[in-house]
Length: 113
Image 1: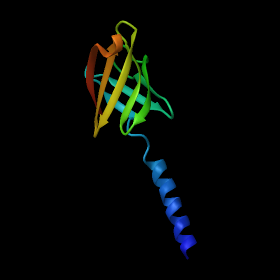
Image 2: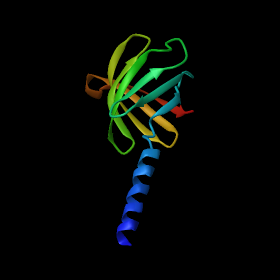
Image 3: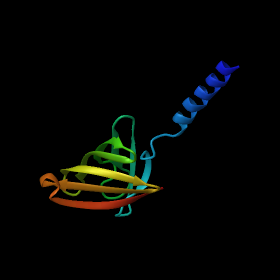
């Protein structure tokens, strides 16, 4: 009896883990109003889906902890790449890119579609 319950619990957790995909994945509305898609498995790629730079990949992030990500962010207007990080809070994603070891940073907040 105990073994059946344990197997059922393990199966439930496996299915639930699959259903709870990483919350950063999906389509996001950028601060400029464009749509960006974030997807991947161990590394999350950011690709613009609408707007002037549609089709351009603008970043790559990896999970660093609970709802925190780090990697590289590229400004599509000038193709400069910055050290980037993102923090997910509900349906908002705060993105920031920095140069000079974090001395100069810019940030944006995106919203999940």
